[in-house]
Length: 478
Image: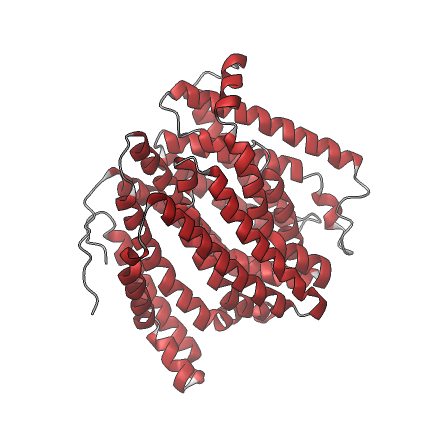
């Protein structure tokens, strides 16, 4: 029997802000989801493989672009200090981007000599611009988190998703890496919008003495978070690099679209939760208040969201990809049912890892990320078997274990006891079984009704999530 939890959410700024962010997130997500079936038919697995490799290089380099000083933007009590951190980060980002552009010219004939696809050569000159505007967006997003401008963040997310989708359709016929260029255009537009808003309320004055103080005060961020973030990002990109280098661009594209379809809602929701959690948890910490109550509420929503969805993906991903994307993406369906296992754990761990920043436990955060990386890296031992599914299975299991270890360390820092969430886990699995009962029955008794089972499960989940979102501020947590 599922009982209402004794913890009740009243209307409060934290969850009102979460609702604002998740509205923009939902709109951005809707655009991407609605356009994906068409995009998947316009572009080949090889095209997605090219974009995936570009994105893997991009996200890995972005880690060092502002030396992680952007994480300090919400922390100071002084608004002027936070503004100076923003300026400092933009200077660092511009310098790194320019350096990468110079290196791109120098090593033009050496870089991206991978496979036979000529688009690899074109991508090398897009990377520096992608680095700058991606980092700029991240920097200004942290500024708006500090200022609690969650509506502006939501608008920027929507605009980025809309322009990216529009560009994907418009540039399809051109002889360029259209998926890469489309992503860059969306990022540029959203970044400029945030920059205009920032400049309208702040004077951009470079104060060398203040920048020097910032460099020294928050030196722990580059020392601990660059190595940690780098190995965390590189670890998550291992499948793309391995599948591209040791298997084929096609299988890399299959993995890419399965990963992107799953990570799209997961990352957008996770980022929205992280933004609100960072803002209000850091405020509680500044006031020396206990943050366990908000951690419990965040965990409750995370588990209610991710467990039923994960069960749905495991049961239905093969048929879903076949129906929505077409027969050429059948492999992506099989891959999705596997990797959702570790992505669901990452969804829980990612927002909570903000605690390492709030409590200035950067060293502990680095250690947990190193554990995850080592476990993921160990999956490379399967390469000699020349079986991509064996590699992905080992990678999934190792990643799942790594994220559980990270969650354990997070709970240890705030003295949060695991028994507090036992009933939340049970509740999530029970709801997952109930909402996916039609798919379960189809698998057990009659597979010819596979699409009917998928449709009913999807409908039940839709009603379930609408109800959760509608009552976000005023209902008792399950």
